[in-house]
Amino acid sequence: MGKFQARAVGKGDYDGIRKQIVEVLEQPGYDDGSAGPVLVRLAWHASGTFSLVEHNGGSNGAGMRFGKERDDPANAGLVHAIEFIMPIQAANPWITHADLWTLAGVTALEAMKGPKVPWRPGRTDYDDESHADDHRGNIGDRLPDGALGADHLRHVFGRMGYSDQEIVALSGAHNLGRCHADRSGFDGPWVVNPTRFSNQYFKLLSTRKWTPRKWDGPFQYETIVAGERLMMLPTDMALMEDPEFKKWVLIYAKDQKKFFEDFALAFGKLIELGVDRDDSGFSRLVNKAAREGKP
Ligand code: ZEM
Image (cartoon, rainbow, N blue to C red; front, side, top):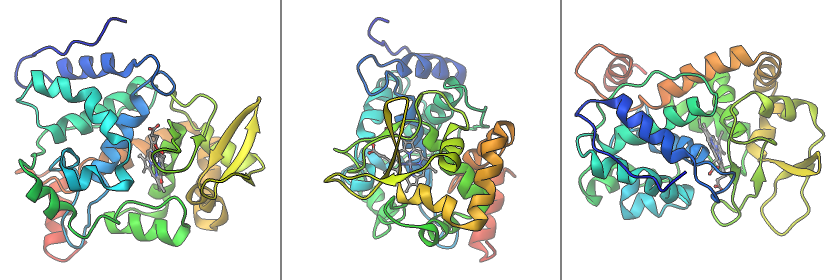
C-alpha cells in the first residue's frame, strides 16, 4: 500500500469517511500490522468516562486531544490512534473529532470481521482544554484498572449503566490488540490472531491453564500456545473467578454468534454514552432518565 492520503468527501458522506478509515487500518510495521485494535480502544476510552448519575463524561468532546486527558496514564498510546485518523478530519472539517473517533472504532471492528455496530453522528467537540478539564476533572480514575478484580469492574461499568452480562461481553474486546510495556506496563496479546475479532478470548480464558508470569513487570497471567506467550490481566481472570461473570464467559466461549450480538449491543450503547441528541433516540432516553434522577 502507498502512503495514506486523506481526501475531502461531501458533507455527511460517512461512507466516504469509512472507506478512508479502512485504508488507514493497514499499518505495516505497527504492532500486528493493523491500527484496528488501537482505534477500537480509542472509541472505548473516549466513551467510558460516562457517569449515569452525575451525567457527565462520555463520547462527546474528544477531550483526548488536549493535555490533561491526553496525558492521563490510562490513555497512554492512544495518541497513535488519534494521529492515524487525524488527517481524515483535517481533510473533512465537517465531521467532529468525537464522531470520527467512534466511527473509526465501529469501522475497524467490522473490518476485523467483528459485528456491525449501529452508529449515528451528532457528537460535539470541546474546542479547548478547559472543557476537557471539566470533562475529566477529578474523574480521571473512571476507566478500569487491569490490576483489580470483579468488584472494581462492577463499580466502573455499573457507573456507565452496564449489567454483569454486558461487562463480560465488552471484555471480549480483548480478543483484539495487545498490551504494551511502555504504555500500560502490561505486556502481550490475549489471543494468537489479535487483528481478527472472534470469541477466542473466551475460549482461551475458560480452557487454558493460566499461571502468574515471572517477570519484573506488573502482575499478569500467561499461557503458551503454539510457542507464543499469551496474557490475561487480573481483571480478565476475575471473569472466571466470579460465578455470575463466569456463566457468561462459558456461554460466549461456546456461542460466537451470541457473543457478537451482545457485543454489538453493548458497544453500540458505549459510543452513545453522554450523547444528547434532539430526538427520541436511545441516548436521549438514557440521559433524560439520568437528569431526572431515574437511572
Ligand atoms: Zn482494554 N485494555 N480494558 N478494553 N483494550 C488494554 C488494551 C485494549 C482494560 C485494560 O486495562 C486494558 C475494555 C476493557 C478493559 C481494548 C478494548 C477494550 C490494555 C493494554 C489494558 C491494560 C493497553 C496498552 O498497553 O496498550 C480493562 C481493565 C478493562 C476492563 C474490563 C473494553 C470495554 C474495550 C472495548 C470495548 C483494546 C482493543 C485493546 C488493545 C489496544 C491495542 O493497542 O492493541
